Length: 125
Length: 137
Image 1 (tube, rainbow over the protein chains, first blue to last red):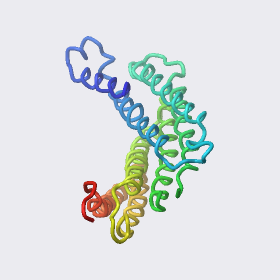
Image 2 (image 1 turned 135 degrees about the horizontal axis):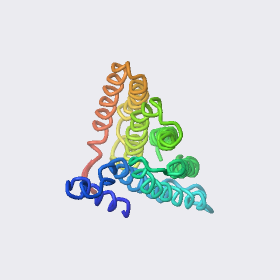
Image 3 (image 1 turned 30 degrees about the vertical axis):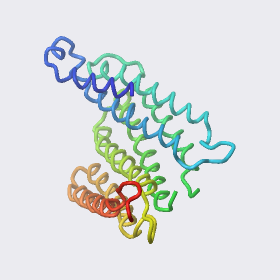
C-alpha cells in the first residue's frame, strides 16, 4: 500500500510541467514509478496473498518456511527502495556505485525465495 | 487445488523465475554492460512477467476458487480451460521470441493471436461460474 501511494504521487508529479521544470529528476522517474507499482505493489500483494491462502505445506509448517517468507519480504522491499534511489541518479548520468546491481540482486533473491517456498505448496489438498 | 490450477500456477512460477532473472540482468546491465542486447531483453521480460506470470497465475487461482456448480462437474467442462492453458503457453514464448528476434514480427503476431484465443477460452469457461451465492446452478 505504501508503494502504491508512492507510485500514485509520482504519477501526479510527472504530469505537472512546473514541477518537472523545477526538478529535472522528475522527468526520468517513469520507469521507477512503473516498478513501484508493478513490483512494490502488485507483485508484493500477490506474494502476500499467495503466502496466506495457498494450500498448506504441512500441519507443523502450514506456510512452508517462515524464514524464507521474511527473506522475500525484506529483499523485495530493499531492492525496490534501492531502485528508487539509484535509477533516477543513473538516468541523470550520476555515479550510482553499484546501487542498481544491488537492487537487481535483491529483487532476484525475493523472487527466487518466493518460488522456492511456494512451489511445494502448489498441490492437491 | 485442482490439477489444472496446479499446472497453471506452477507454470506461472517458471515464467516468474525466468522473467525476474531477465529483469535483474536488465537493471544490473545499466551499470555493467548497457548494450543493445540488454535493451532487447526488455519486451521479453515484460511479456514473461505480464502474460506468463501474472495472467497465468490469475487464471490458475480463478479456476481454483471461483464458485462451483452444484450439478454435474463442479468446475464445468475441462476442455476450454485446458485449451486456455496450452494456447497461452504456446503464445507467450512465440511473442517473446518474436520480440527478441526483432526481424520476426510474424512470430509475435502468431503468439498474440494464441493469447487472444487463450483468453477467449478461459472467459467462456469462467463466465458461467461468476454468480451469486445460493443461485440455482
